[in-house]
Length: 375
Image (cartoon, rainbow, N blue to C red; front, side):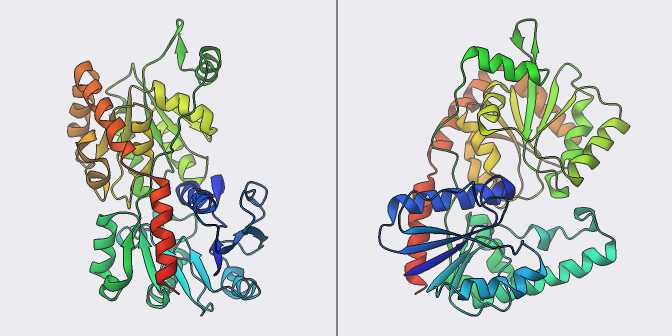
């Protein structure tokens, strides 16, 4: 087959979706020597992807996601490659593309949390965009040969809202990276010193969050308990955007002195931050999968997680769960872990086992089988 993969979100430009797309392409290169692939990239990530399999070819498209060009121009770019199948790793399937495709739907966050706070535009513009989202999503789910999602929780959520997909949906779970980034002591010291996390010859104790700052991530809730732990740094890692700027403003208004916004960091630097964190805290109100806490487990960091969405399914008994709407409950949970080293070691050990149970290779194998079913 001639298979196209919409990889415009590939790599760091696409955040969590970018990691999924990057690992999918990488693993397919390893396991599929039969099909021919065309990897559609945008200007920002075109050089980031370098094919390692002669059957994989990259294609530059100037149609950005969520744009009119995506709807009007991108379908013609796809048609020009005479593809037997296209995989769209997101819901934004062009309405005009009428040939065979499969899609990955990671979650229904916008379905459950429609709010103008999630947009930099006016309320009127946001709700117009939301209606377009519903139109594109409904159409994509109806036309898709197969629907892939990333957790049993999300599968049931999709079926509940779109019962007609029941017979064509499957789950391919994501995974933490198969390797960890290790730095020598001097490099580690340099990274932590640069971020102000090295004091008196030792790493400072800190709590870590990695990810974006969208409203459903519930980071204001995390700020609300920061004042209870003045000796601990709360470190937020994520590329600065409108939502992180808004969170920074909130932290300044509350005059919080123990908040550190690290911005975007490389994977190697992130490995150091994961490894030396006292706790990884994930207060999200809804997750289709929840990759960052699984990555924290891979590095041996005890995870304190919200009990919402797919998180209990994905993290199992390896995370210490809390209600993300009860401030006092989170405060007590942090105290319980902070003051009990044996408990932290217990969750650290469980975390290694839990993270090892997921595999990007298995994800790619199941996806490839879905391509065959979609012929």
